[in-house]
Image 1 (tube, rainbow, N blue to C red):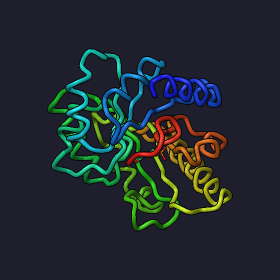
Image 2: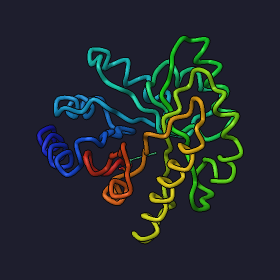
Image 3: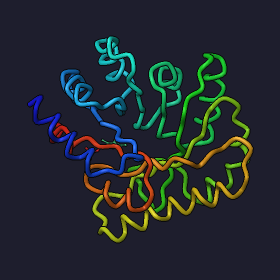
Image 4: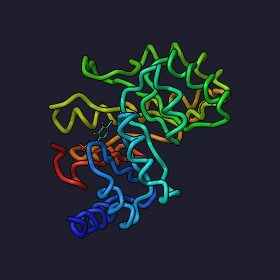
Amino acid sequence: MTSSISERITQIRASIPPSVRLIAVTKQMPTEVIRAAYAAGIRDFGENRIQEAATKQAQLQDLSDITWHFIGHLQSNKAKKALEQFHWIHSVDSLQLAQRLDQLAGQLGVSPQVCLQVKILPDPSKSGWTVPELLTDLPELDKCKTLQIQGLMTIPPQGLKDADVSYVFNTTHELAKGIAEQKCSRIKMQELSMGMSGDYQLAIQAGATMVRLGTILFGKRT
Ligand SMILES: *Cc1c(COP(=O)(O)O)cnc(C)c1O
């Protein structure tokens, strides 16, 4: 098991450009899996539940150079915990949440790196800004003092054809470029968090800078 994790990581890492950050998504996986991935060189880990992550992080304190990425839907009442436990939050999906995180981060003295989650195609199962909503909220988002808004995150709806998945990723990239041209004072658009096990190659072709991989590294979650 352990050796196959390291083999898969080596294989997948080699298939991804070195400039693309590989985030190992370990939700529902035990800490032994995280340790095996760490031993294989992974330092970026993604989790989608605050409590589950807290339990594992408590058991992994010796691995002090891990960068933790929160990738799940974040409820406002867990915003403080998210800031205490994670360096990155990929799934900031509303102005209200961004402002709450910004305020709390100031109080806590942390400067979290975040991505804004966008929906390019309608998807009732996902949260996030539509393109017009994001463009409307941009001036207010740019007033966040402490959040380090670094780019966009997207998840295509399930069951799309490759061409449509690529459309979602390319449109997200174009949106990021468009926002970058607006010369916001604080918002940066240098990161694109997109691509999971089934579509990361398409995401990389479209300019992803971070891919979030679970199943392809660790097998199916039960
Ligand atoms: C679970 C999850 C992933 C990883 O998905 P796989 O298909 O297992 O690679 C990536 N991103 C998010 C937001 C997730 O919830």
